[in-house]
Image (cartoon, rainbow, N blue to C red; front, side):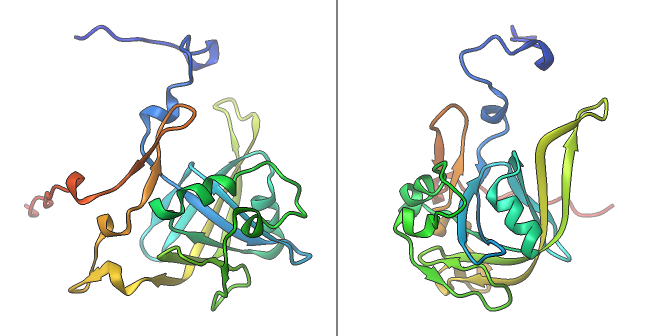
Length: 207
């Protein structure tokens, strides 16, 4: 067995930077747009994000603290996920600034809005894929002892999905073509998906 660094998280990792989100990486980014009860737009990226179910399509993002995205999702029951790609990486990063609830991060990041069809929050213009979502659950996470954390999992059902036609070929969505970016570890690591990372592997036939 190779020499390994072992630690118990409750006692600290003993490294220069917490390795957890560098190990579980790269991770898709939940670029979430919401609308407050008073009609103020909000846009924020979450790297604790993923798709959770096929039918119905459920996606979830987890927030460290009761942030505006969570508060708005609870108040209105709606949010939009916007696919983050390399051309909009800087704007995505700008939208994560710690600003007041009265600030419109679309304007802060220099992004245009697109209207949604089935929900009120706007979509990010220039993003090639959007999921319009209705909130199904907001769950407060706990420790193994049942202690409540200031960590909130928001789950939504995608009731409307927009896909740029340029990303579909022969009826198949081309993942690498979108230039999707993903969050890595450390304070600043991101990755871009490209065709050079592609390999194919089919599931075994049933026995």
